[in-house]
Length: 255
Image (cartoon, rainbow, N blue to C red; front, side, top):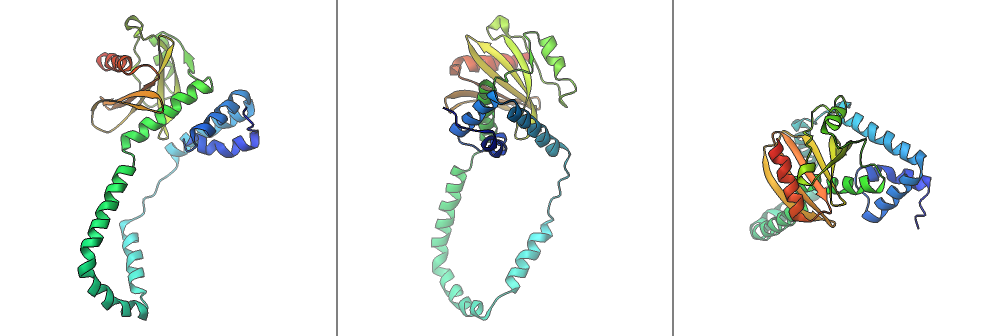
Protein backbone atom coordinates (compact mmCIF):
# COMPACT_ATOMS: atom_id res chain seq x y z
CA UNK A 1 0.00 0.00 0.00
CA UNK A 2 1.32 3.44 -0.90
CA UNK A 3 0.81 5.69 2.16
CA UNK A 4 2.42 8.74 0.51
CA UNK A 5 0.48 11.99 0.73
CA UNK A 6 0.94 15.22 -1.20
CA UNK A 7 3.11 16.88 1.46
CA UNK A 8 5.59 14.02 1.49
CA UNK A 9 5.55 13.86 -2.31
CA UNK A 10 6.36 17.58 -2.55
CA UNK A 11 9.37 17.11 -0.27
CA UNK A 12 10.67 14.25 -2.41
CA UNK A 13 10.12 15.74 -5.85
CA UNK A 14 13.53 17.39 -6.08
CA UNK A 15 15.27 14.14 -5.22
CA UNK A 16 13.00 12.30 -7.65
CA UNK A 17 13.88 14.68 -10.47
CA UNK A 18 17.60 14.35 -9.73
CA UNK A 19 17.43 10.52 -9.44
CA UNK A 20 18.67 10.71 -5.85
CA UNK A 21 15.97 8.53 -4.27
CA UNK A 22 16.31 4.84 -3.60
CA UNK A 23 14.30 2.55 -5.88
CA UNK A 24 11.51 1.84 -3.37
CA UNK A 25 10.92 5.53 -2.60
CA UNK A 26 11.07 6.47 -6.29
CA UNK A 27 8.39 3.88 -7.02
CA UNK A 28 6.16 5.29 -4.28
CA UNK A 29 6.54 8.79 -5.74
CA UNK A 30 5.80 7.50 -9.25
CA UNK A 31 2.68 5.69 -8.05
CA UNK A 32 1.47 8.83 -6.28
CA UNK A 33 2.04 10.89 -9.44
CA UNK A 34 -0.15 8.46 -11.37
CA UNK A 35 -3.07 9.18 -9.03
CA UNK A 36 -2.63 12.83 -8.11
CA UNK A 37 -3.09 15.42 -10.85
CA UNK A 38 -1.93 18.31 -8.61
CA UNK A 39 1.40 16.64 -7.78
CA UNK A 40 1.83 15.57 -11.40
CA UNK A 41 1.34 19.19 -12.51
CA UNK A 42 3.88 20.39 -9.95
CA UNK A 43 6.31 17.72 -11.13
CA UNK A 44 5.98 18.85 -14.75
CA UNK A 45 6.44 22.50 -13.74
CA UNK A 46 9.60 21.63 -11.82
CA UNK A 47 11.00 19.78 -14.83
CA UNK A 48 10.43 22.82 -17.03
CA UNK A 49 12.05 25.09 -14.42
CA UNK A 50 15.04 22.78 -14.05
CA UNK A 51 15.69 22.80 -17.79
CA UNK A 52 15.19 26.56 -17.99
CA UNK A 53 17.74 27.20 -15.25
CA UNK A 54 20.19 24.81 -16.89
CA UNK A 55 19.88 26.50 -20.27
CA UNK A 56 19.62 30.17 -19.31
CA UNK A 57 21.13 30.81 -15.86
CA UNK A 58 24.62 32.42 -16.04
CA UNK A 59 27.55 30.37 -14.79
CA UNK A 60 30.68 31.98 -13.36
CA UNK A 61 33.82 29.93 -12.85
CA UNK A 62 35.99 30.87 -9.87
CA UNK A 63 39.43 32.12 -10.96
CA UNK A 64 42.45 29.95 -10.24
CA UNK A 65 43.97 32.84 -8.26
CA UNK A 66 41.24 32.42 -5.61
CA UNK A 67 42.52 29.00 -4.55
CA UNK A 68 46.12 30.29 -4.48
CA UNK A 69 45.12 33.23 -2.27
CA UNK A 70 43.25 30.96 0.16
CA UNK A 71 46.18 28.56 0.58
CA UNK A 72 48.60 31.44 0.89
CA UNK A 73 46.50 32.96 3.68
CA UNK A 74 46.27 29.66 5.54
CA UNK A 75 50.01 29.10 5.36
CA UNK A 76 50.74 32.59 6.70
CA UNK A 77 48.47 32.15 9.73
CA UNK A 78 50.77 29.80 11.71
CA UNK A 79 51.09 29.77 15.51
CA UNK A 80 54.15 29.19 17.72
CA UNK A 81 52.93 25.67 18.27
CA UNK A 82 53.05 25.20 14.52
CA UNK A 83 56.71 26.24 14.54
CA UNK A 84 57.50 23.87 17.43
CA UNK A 85 56.04 21.01 15.50
CA UNK A 86 57.86 22.01 12.32
CA UNK A 87 61.08 20.26 13.32
CA UNK A 88 59.22 17.14 14.34
CA UNK A 89 57.35 17.07 11.03
CA UNK A 90 60.58 17.56 9.10
CA UNK A 91 62.31 14.76 10.96
CA UNK A 92 59.40 12.39 10.51
CA UNK A 93 58.91 13.07 6.80
CA UNK A 94 61.84 10.87 5.82
CA UNK A 95 60.37 7.69 7.34
CA UNK A 96 56.70 8.61 6.92
CA UNK A 97 57.01 9.36 3.21
CA UNK A 98 56.98 5.72 1.98
CA UNK A 99 54.06 4.86 4.27
CA UNK A 100 52.13 7.94 3.24
CA UNK A 101 52.79 7.29 -0.43
CA UNK A 102 51.45 3.74 -0.13
CA UNK A 103 48.38 4.94 1.74
CA UNK A 104 47.79 7.70 -0.78
CA UNK A 105 48.10 5.22 -3.63
CA UNK A 106 45.62 2.86 -1.97
CA UNK A 107 43.19 5.72 -1.37
CA UNK A 108 43.52 6.85 -4.97
CA UNK A 109 42.81 3.36 -6.27
CA UNK A 110 39.78 3.05 -4.00
CA UNK A 111 38.46 6.40 -5.18
CA UNK A 112 39.00 5.38 -8.80
CA UNK A 113 37.06 2.14 -8.33
CA UNK A 114 34.26 3.70 -6.26
CA UNK A 115 33.70 6.70 -8.50
CA UNK A 116 31.32 5.96 -11.39
CA UNK A 117 32.59 6.64 -14.88
CA UNK A 118 31.08 9.34 -17.02
CA UNK A 119 29.22 6.75 -19.08
CA UNK A 120 27.80 5.11 -15.96
CA UNK A 121 26.08 8.35 -14.97
CA UNK A 122 24.26 8.51 -18.31
CA UNK A 123 23.29 4.84 -18.14
CA UNK A 124 22.00 5.03 -14.57
CA UNK A 125 19.81 8.01 -15.35
CA UNK A 126 18.54 6.43 -18.58
CA UNK A 127 17.43 3.34 -16.65
CA UNK A 128 15.62 5.53 -14.11
CA UNK A 129 13.88 7.46 -16.91
CA UNK A 130 12.89 4.19 -18.58
CA UNK A 131 11.32 2.86 -15.38
CA UNK A 132 9.60 6.16 -14.68
CA UNK A 133 8.11 6.34 -18.18
CA UNK A 134 6.42 2.99 -17.62
CA UNK A 135 5.25 3.63 -14.04
CA UNK A 136 3.67 7.05 -14.60
CA UNK A 137 2.18 6.03 -17.94
CA UNK A 138 4.09 8.71 -19.77
CA UNK A 139 5.74 6.68 -22.48
CA UNK A 140 4.90 9.03 -25.34
CA UNK A 141 4.03 12.68 -25.89
CA UNK A 142 3.30 11.79 -29.51
CA UNK A 143 2.05 8.25 -30.10
CA UNK A 144 2.53 7.12 -33.67
CA UNK A 145 4.19 4.40 -35.71
CA UNK A 146 4.83 6.88 -38.53
CA UNK A 147 8.30 8.43 -38.43
CA UNK A 148 6.99 11.32 -40.53
CA UNK A 149 4.69 12.16 -37.63
CA UNK A 150 7.14 11.56 -34.77
CA UNK A 151 10.20 13.31 -36.18
CA UNK A 152 8.45 16.63 -37.04
CA UNK A 153 6.88 16.67 -33.57
CA UNK A 154 10.33 17.36 -32.06
CA UNK A 155 10.85 20.42 -34.28
CA UNK A 156 10.90 23.56 -32.16
CA UNK A 157 11.08 21.54 -28.94
CA UNK A 158 14.73 20.53 -29.31
CA UNK A 159 17.79 22.35 -30.63
CA UNK A 160 18.73 19.27 -32.64
CA UNK A 161 16.95 16.85 -34.96
CA UNK A 162 16.92 13.29 -33.59
CA UNK A 163 17.07 10.43 -36.11
CA UNK A 164 13.80 8.49 -36.20
CA UNK A 165 13.53 5.14 -37.98
CA UNK A 166 10.66 2.85 -38.86
CA UNK A 167 11.94 -0.60 -37.90
CA UNK A 168 8.61 -2.43 -38.03
CA UNK A 169 9.79 -4.59 -40.93
CA UNK A 170 12.64 -5.82 -38.72
CA UNK A 171 10.28 -6.53 -35.81
CA UNK A 172 10.84 -3.35 -33.82
CA UNK A 173 7.84 -1.09 -34.53
CA UNK A 174 8.05 2.58 -33.63
CA UNK A 175 5.54 3.50 -30.91
CA UNK A 176 6.14 7.23 -30.53
CA UNK A 177 8.34 9.75 -28.78
CA UNK A 178 8.52 12.21 -25.92
CA UNK A 179 10.78 14.80 -24.32
CA UNK A 180 12.89 13.58 -21.43
CA UNK A 181 16.01 14.67 -19.56
CA UNK A 182 19.45 13.11 -19.09
CA UNK A 183 21.99 14.94 -16.94
CA UNK A 184 19.70 17.99 -17.07
CA UNK A 185 19.83 18.05 -20.87
CA UNK A 186 16.65 17.95 -22.89
CA UNK A 187 16.60 14.59 -24.64
CA UNK A 188 14.58 12.88 -27.34
CA UNK A 189 13.15 9.61 -26.05
CA UNK A 190 11.90 7.29 -28.80
CA UNK A 191 9.87 4.22 -27.87
CA UNK A 192 9.89 0.97 -29.81
CA UNK A 193 8.17 -2.36 -29.23
CA UNK A 194 9.36 -5.94 -29.44
CA UNK A 195 7.09 -8.86 -28.51
CA UNK A 196 5.30 -6.91 -25.76
CA UNK A 197 8.57 -5.44 -24.50
CA UNK A 198 9.26 -1.70 -24.54
CA UNK A 199 12.53 -0.16 -25.69
CA UNK A 200 13.38 3.41 -24.75
CA UNK A 201 15.99 4.94 -27.06
CA UNK A 202 17.42 8.18 -25.64
CA UNK A 203 19.10 10.52 -28.13
CA UNK A 204 20.90 13.80 -27.48
CA UNK A 205 23.83 15.71 -28.99
CA UNK A 206 27.38 15.38 -27.66
CA UNK A 207 30.77 16.93 -28.39
CA UNK A 208 32.52 13.71 -27.44
CA UNK A 209 34.11 11.47 -30.03
CA UNK A 210 32.33 8.46 -31.50
CA UNK A 211 32.37 5.37 -29.33
CA UNK A 212 31.56 1.77 -30.18
CA UNK A 213 28.45 0.21 -28.60
CA UNK A 214 28.75 -1.04 -25.04
CA UNK A 215 26.34 -3.62 -23.62
CA UNK A 216 25.66 -4.01 -19.92
CA UNK A 217 22.91 -4.82 -17.43
CA UNK A 218 21.75 -2.74 -14.47
CA UNK A 219 18.86 -3.14 -12.05
CA UNK A 220 17.42 -5.96 -14.14
CA UNK A 221 17.49 -4.05 -17.44
CA UNK A 222 19.73 -4.43 -20.47
CA UNK A 223 21.39 -1.34 -21.91
CA UNK A 224 23.33 -0.59 -25.08
CA UNK A 225 25.02 2.80 -25.30
CA UNK A 226 27.13 4.36 -28.03
CA UNK A 227 28.12 7.67 -29.62
CA UNK A 228 27.85 8.28 -33.33
CA UNK A 229 27.94 11.39 -35.53
CA UNK A 230 27.97 13.75 -32.52
CA UNK A 231 24.94 12.02 -31.00
CA UNK A 232 24.74 9.99 -27.79
CA UNK A 233 22.43 6.96 -27.86
CA UNK A 234 21.26 4.89 -24.89
CA UNK A 235 18.82 2.01 -25.49
CA UNK A 236 17.16 0.52 -22.38
CA UNK A 237 14.76 -2.42 -22.13
CA UNK A 238 13.93 -5.61 -20.26
CA UNK A 239 14.30 -7.28 -23.65
CA UNK A 240 16.99 -9.95 -23.78
CA UNK A 241 20.51 -8.72 -24.49
CA UNK A 242 20.92 -10.19 -27.99
CA UNK A 243 17.67 -8.69 -29.32
CA UNK A 244 18.49 -5.28 -27.86
CA UNK A 245 21.92 -5.42 -29.51
CA UNK A 246 20.26 -6.25 -32.84
CA UNK A 247 17.97 -3.24 -32.39
CA UNK A 248 20.97 -1.01 -31.68
CA UNK A 249 22.73 -2.27 -34.79
CA UNK A 250 19.66 -1.46 -36.90
CA UNK A 251 19.65 2.10 -35.53
CA UNK A 252 23.37 2.51 -36.26
CA UNK A 253 22.98 1.27 -39.83
CA UNK A 254 20.07 3.62 -40.40
CA UNK A 255 22.26 6.66 -39.94
